[in-house]
Length: 296
Image 1 (cartoon, helix red, strand yellow):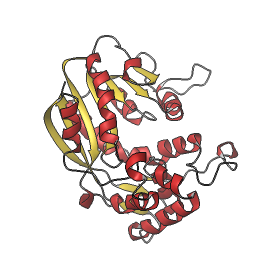
Image 2 (cartoon, helix red, strand yellow; image 1 turned 90 degrees about the horizontal axis):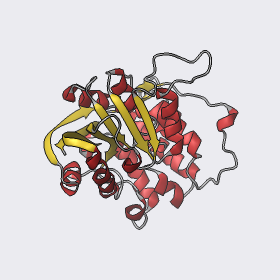
Image 3 (tube, helix red, strand yellow; image 1 turned 30 degrees about the horizontal axis):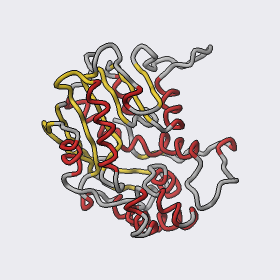
């Protein structure tokens, strides 16, 4: 299983964004790298649990909505699945391309899936089309339930994706578990407080996950629930700096960054993380995530 305690990665000067407005979120390239190298792997236990339950393998033709930088696709492809990922974030998708598609140049690393088993498409599900027959697995691994409007926003994507799937295909939705089971919820409340009550509901600011978030999405998309599960996904970081960078890469603090300045957000997140700091300087926050298995 992919480890969730990550070492801080220092970047070269090519990723420095010294000209950025201090009140704006970090540059897209920096944040995409932080997500891919620090934060994304925290959800690896969720991906693995879903794939184990569904016996993902060579017979699987998967379409991943909001595939990001591609770790979930890479894990599925390593099990023999044929995978297609769609995302509107060009920076994250570029990193997914590095992971999944081999460099044709000399000395290219081996062992990546390649174009015969992996496809990446910028845009929404409609841009993906069918690949070698209809998909039999649709996944949405971007956890819903912690940003205002995220569950409602997923419905149109599902409505576009379902027609690309075979009759009776499996659809997997994922979300945050109950706030009382997620230590990170205490830190994410900083995002809501700094964004202000008048801003967060309209701008994707943090909100507490609700028990029926996933079921509500399934109902709106016309999907039939067929089982669910909970997975422990602790967030572990080598130090406070890595924790702050990883958390800010999620996008859940964007409303707070727009409402105030980056320095204040980073300082307050750092303060909120102190209860989860261990004597050796690492940061450890237990969390539970949910997944809902549906039939299209």
